[in-house]
Image (tube, rainbow, N blue to C red):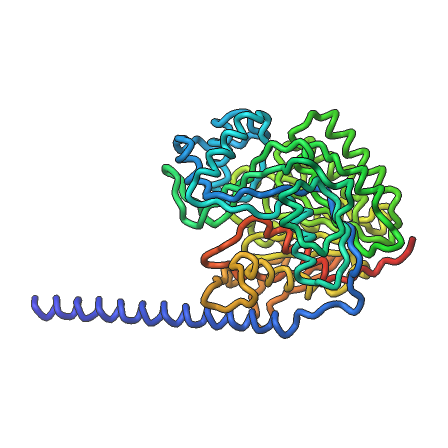
Length: 478
């Protein structure tokens, strides 16, 4: 009996030893893979032969008030809510339930408040917290700021509602016309949360943020006409636009009128001038359908994250559209690949749809990015997707250079790039995977996820802006 117990004990110790050794070996191998990916990016990410030099950027801008989301809800004496996604927010209960919905999923989202007094009360409470920060806000303003910091030689004309405090915060190198100035800053509330953070019985699977605002200037796209009037087509290489999502708080008639005004302006652009549209979180399927059917074919490039991609598929009856309702975290790679392919095939320029201008889609999520484009329309896309992926880690960690100790590879050991694909494996020394389908070509790169993220807001804008600046537009016909 003694020897039997001894044998069992020795076996148990042996199993623990082997398991620990195996686990350590896996961790060492993973860290080496992360180092290899970083080194591959450093040596292979190079600018295209012809770079964008003169940009016209708009139309949304504001001040972001960034706070710990759960801390704010506790300060407002709000208990953990039931998970319910609201298109717009009318009450504190709406904030509670919609935050809970996206907190549990770990998905970025943005919703407009319709009651000014309630929103102002929430902002006032935010300013009394131990931790709060002000940052440049608005997709367009963030893209302009990031690009001018990374590429100081680039000249940027910025159009958006710029109040006194935001004017002080924006880089002085930006050209901001007088018509863009407003007397009082628009404020957006950014409720951040960390990976594994708890609120009641909910736990966040990743670090992310929920955004809410009561915004009169951006929500009515008041700078839209100024944006088009101030554009010098002959002295512009690239146009960047965002802010359509904030129109969601308006009536359907108002939304449709502003979308039509946008389309009228875009119709006057020559096809030789590339236009990038950055989407952001929306909840009204009718509004998203309007953007898909009326706007997307009038821009050259589209940027969007997992919430926006899956909701676009839901609104447009695309592939895997039911996943929007239960998706938690990034979508499976093959599903995202299917949806990017669907966007290009259904809304993009092709032999069967030559009138469309859409030739590029840049999808970005926490653990990987995909760029798809019409063959011959863009070059340097494989490098651009790597540059965007690298920027995601640098921006989240708030560092100039990545190292394996601060990031985590959350990419599957084997995967399919799209549903009918072969099974693939990641080569860390060649961390960009490319493939072709019909008239389109695609590139995918993993992201090295920051272990202790310092910034979650504006990541998509930084990623898209960086990817564009490492891309070269090849269509020069008028």
